[in-house]
Image (cartoon, rainbow, N blue to C red; front, side, top):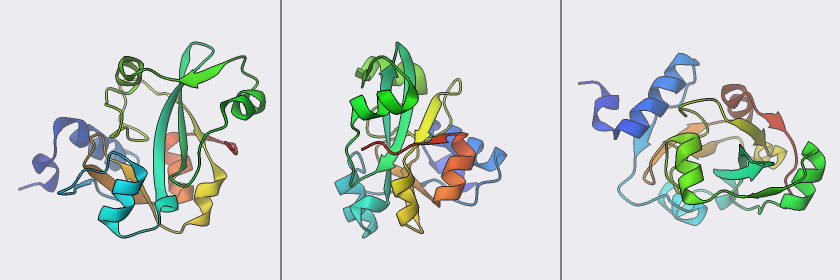
Amino acid sequence: MDEVEDLPERSRQVARALSALGARGRVRALPASTRTAAEAAEALECEVGAIANSLVFMADGKPLLVMTSGRHRVNVALLAQRLGRTEIRRAEPEEVRAATGQAIGGVAPLGHPVPVETVVDPALADYPLLWAAGGTPNTIFPLDYTELVRITGGSEAAVN
Protein backbone atom coordinates (compact mmCIF):
# COMPACT_ATOMS: atom_id res chain seq x y z
CA MET A 1 0.00 0.00 0.00
CA ASP A 2 1.26 3.47 -0.84
CA GLU A 3 2.21 5.48 2.26
CA VAL A 4 0.42 8.54 0.88
CA GLU A 5 -2.94 6.74 1.00
CA ASP A 6 -2.77 6.75 4.81
CA LEU A 7 -2.66 10.56 4.88
CA PRO A 8 -5.59 13.02 4.99
CA GLU A 9 -6.61 14.37 1.56
CA ARG A 10 -5.00 17.79 2.17
CA SER A 11 -1.71 16.07 3.00
CA ARG A 12 -1.98 13.82 -0.06
CA GLN A 13 -2.23 16.99 -2.18
CA VAL A 14 0.95 18.29 -0.55
CA ALA A 15 2.68 14.93 -1.05
CA ARG A 16 1.74 14.92 -4.75
CA ALA A 17 3.03 18.49 -5.16
CA LEU A 18 6.32 17.54 -3.45
CA SER A 19 6.71 14.51 -5.68
CA ALA A 20 5.95 16.51 -8.84
CA LEU A 21 8.70 18.97 -7.89
CA GLY A 22 11.22 16.22 -7.17
CA ALA A 23 11.43 17.05 -3.47
CA ARG A 24 13.23 14.52 -1.28
CA GLY A 25 11.10 14.82 1.86
CA ARG A 26 7.94 12.81 2.40
CA VAL A 27 4.86 13.92 4.31
CA ARG A 28 4.26 11.99 7.49
CA ALA A 29 1.66 12.09 10.22
CA LEU A 30 2.59 12.58 13.85
CA PRO A 31 0.44 11.29 16.72
CA ALA A 32 0.34 14.73 18.37
CA SER A 33 -0.65 18.12 16.99
CA THR A 34 2.02 20.23 15.35
CA ARG A 35 -0.29 23.25 15.07
CA THR A 36 2.28 25.55 16.72
CA ALA A 37 6.03 25.72 16.21
CA ALA A 38 6.54 24.78 19.87
CA GLU A 39 4.32 21.68 19.53
CA ALA A 40 6.10 20.64 16.34
CA ALA A 41 9.55 21.13 17.86
CA GLU A 42 8.58 19.07 20.90
CA ALA A 43 7.15 16.25 18.78
CA LEU A 44 10.22 16.21 16.52
CA GLU A 45 12.73 16.80 19.32
CA CYS A 46 14.33 19.69 17.44
CA GLU A 47 14.89 23.39 18.02
CA VAL A 48 11.83 25.58 17.53
CA GLY A 49 13.83 27.63 15.01
CA ALA A 50 14.00 24.61 12.68
CA ILE A 51 10.22 24.71 12.24
CA ALA A 52 9.39 26.49 9.00
CA ASN A 53 6.23 28.35 9.97
CA SER A 54 3.77 29.00 7.13
CA LEU A 55 2.01 32.27 7.95
CA VAL A 56 -0.60 33.77 5.66
CA PHE A 57 -1.03 37.52 5.43
CA MET A 58 -3.05 39.81 3.20
CA ALA A 59 -0.74 42.22 1.39
CA ASP A 60 -2.65 45.04 -0.28
CA GLY A 61 -5.65 42.71 -0.45
CA LYS A 62 -3.83 39.67 -1.89
CA PRO A 63 -2.63 36.55 -0.05
CA LEU A 64 1.04 36.43 0.91
CA LEU A 65 2.60 33.30 2.41
CA VAL A 66 5.52 34.02 4.70
CA MET A 67 7.83 31.14 5.57
CA THR A 68 9.76 32.02 8.71
CA SER A 69 11.60 30.34 11.53
CA GLY A 70 9.57 29.21 14.51
CA ARG A 71 11.80 31.45 16.61
CA HIS A 72 10.76 34.63 14.75
CA ARG A 73 7.81 36.96 14.64
CA VAL A 74 6.99 38.81 11.44
CA ASN A 75 7.40 42.59 11.58
CA VAL A 76 4.64 43.50 9.12
CA ALA A 77 5.65 47.16 8.82
CA LEU A 78 9.21 46.21 7.95
CA LEU A 79 8.06 43.49 5.54
CA ALA A 80 5.64 45.90 3.82
CA GLN A 81 8.50 48.36 3.36
CA ARG A 82 10.83 45.66 1.99
CA LEU A 83 8.17 44.41 -0.44
CA GLY A 84 6.92 47.86 -1.45
CA ARG A 85 3.41 47.19 -0.11
CA THR A 86 1.06 49.66 1.51
CA GLU A 87 -0.49 47.31 4.07
CA ILE A 88 0.20 43.80 5.33
CA ARG A 89 -2.05 42.20 7.93
CA ARG A 90 -2.60 38.69 9.26
CA ALA A 91 -5.15 36.83 7.18
CA GLU A 92 -8.41 35.77 8.79
CA PRO A 93 -8.99 32.00 9.05
CA GLU A 94 -11.42 32.02 6.11
CA GLU A 95 -8.89 33.97 3.99
CA VAL A 96 -6.19 31.41 4.84
CA ARG A 97 -8.42 28.53 3.77
CA ALA A 98 -9.53 30.34 0.60
CA ALA A 99 -5.91 31.04 -0.41
CA THR A 100 -4.34 27.71 0.54
CA GLY A 101 -7.14 25.15 0.85
CA GLN A 102 -5.68 24.44 4.30
CA ALA A 103 -6.47 25.50 7.86
CA ILE A 104 -4.30 27.62 10.14
CA GLY A 105 -1.86 25.37 11.97
CA GLY A 106 -1.44 23.03 9.02
CA VAL A 107 -0.64 25.32 6.10
CA ALA A 108 2.01 23.76 3.89
CA PRO A 109 4.37 25.82 1.75
CA LEU A 110 2.82 24.27 -1.39
CA GLY A 111 -0.15 22.21 -2.57
CA HIS A 112 -2.50 25.18 -2.75
CA PRO A 113 -5.37 25.50 -5.27
CA VAL A 114 -3.48 28.32 -7.04
CA PRO A 115 0.07 29.57 -6.45
CA VAL A 116 0.40 31.99 -3.53
CA GLU A 117 3.09 34.66 -3.53
CA THR A 118 5.68 33.48 -1.02
CA VAL A 119 8.45 35.12 0.98
CA VAL A 120 11.09 32.94 2.63
CA ASP A 121 12.95 34.30 5.66
CA PRO A 122 16.73 33.75 5.28
CA ALA A 123 16.88 33.01 9.03
CA LEU A 124 15.71 29.51 8.09
CA ALA A 125 19.09 28.93 6.43
CA ASP A 126 20.58 28.71 9.95
CA TYR A 127 19.22 25.16 10.20
CA PRO A 128 20.47 22.28 8.03
CA LEU A 129 17.15 20.44 8.45
CA LEU A 130 13.78 22.19 8.46
CA TRP A 131 10.30 20.84 9.10
CA ALA A 132 7.22 22.28 7.37
CA ALA A 133 3.52 21.59 7.80
CA GLY A 134 2.07 18.97 5.50
CA GLY A 135 -1.42 20.39 4.97
CA THR A 136 -2.99 19.46 8.33
CA PRO A 137 -2.12 20.27 11.97
CA ASN A 138 -0.44 16.91 12.54
CA THR A 139 1.41 16.27 9.27
CA ILE A 140 4.91 17.48 8.50
CA PHE A 141 7.76 16.93 6.07
CA PRO A 142 11.52 17.59 6.12
CA LEU A 143 13.48 19.78 3.74
CA ASP A 144 16.35 22.25 3.71
CA TYR A 145 16.41 25.98 3.04
CA THR A 146 17.48 25.72 -0.60
CA GLU A 147 14.72 23.26 -1.32
CA LEU A 148 12.15 25.44 0.47
CA VAL A 149 13.01 28.40 -1.74
CA ARG A 150 12.93 26.18 -4.83
CA ILE A 151 9.61 24.43 -4.20
CA THR A 152 7.80 27.63 -3.23
CA GLY A 153 9.35 29.84 -5.91
CA GLY A 154 9.60 32.27 -3.03
CA SER A 155 11.58 35.46 -2.79
CA GLU A 156 14.04 35.77 0.07
CA ALA A 157 13.45 38.61 2.52
CA ALA A 158 14.17 39.06 6.22
CA VAL A 159 10.89 39.40 8.08
CA ASN A 160 12.04 40.92 11.37
